[in-house]
Amino acid sequence: MIKIYHIPAIAFFLICSSVAMLAQKSVYTFPFENSYKLPPMETFINAEEIASTYQTLGNLYTTEITGLGDETMEQTSSTYISDVKAIDAFRFLKFYMEEQLIAPGEETHGSVEMSIIYFHEKNRVNLGTALNVLTFGLGTLLGIPFATSITDVEVEASFFNETNQFITTHRGVGRGKKLIGLYSLDTRLPHQRALKNALDDLNTNIMADPDLHHVKLPAAVPEP
Image (cartoon, rainbow, N blue to C red):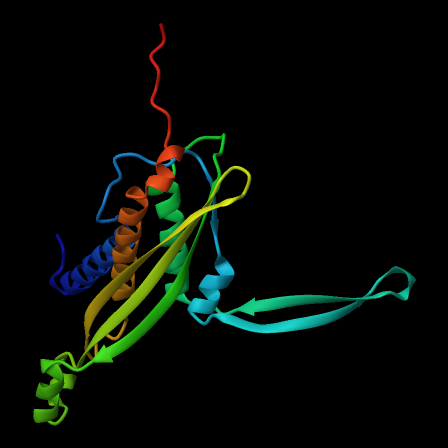
């Protein structure tokens, strides 16, 4: 028999588990499902551009190395600052290309490179802002939202044929919103919503592009 003082702990565990499961599921679901996919292609993610867009690219370091014959060589390396939203962006692009856009197969027919070329967050006043001012900040302590967080992103996909010749580039834009309060400051969720909307917009443009129609998978020919 469960003791009464154990119930709050169990409820807290269930709530945390549910939130974690929903957050994990949100990464692997999109508001669309393609009726067909492009033929097998090599997939690339421009990690440096994502790092630059999210401003996670750190300083460049140049090191002098003395090799054989006292020849001096310079080696340049860079450092990256971990950012959860940049990681989410990388995961979204990777999953979209591998699971939604490109059909599986060993023989590739060209390549596609994707990146995030724009990311911006801003807070906008709302009704809760006025309520918190009228209550001299008491509403904030009670959890009334004091602003609306808006996240905008733009994704880009560039396609190349088997000889690495450029075919076309498509972009998609998306926006995510969330009410911000003293106890709900995290803006990861609206960023994920913005990514989904941007990929939805991008996917619509890709599927409607006649220049990419010729690289569709050929129809199966029944054996005689």
